[in-house]
Length: 77
Image: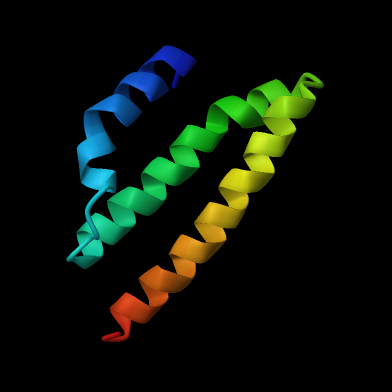
């Protein structure tokens, strides 16, 4: 996935991110999007870009938090 396509996907799904997911599928799609967005920063960080490494760590913290919310939701809140 190229950086441009990731940004386009983010823009297309921005309205969905502002609302809370209501189903397991919506939670999964949101989690998958968070991981996909980090791909660009992983590649840049691998090349030595320190700012990308910082964004990557921030993204990982978001994934961790959202994963916990996903688990709680799947257990019935």
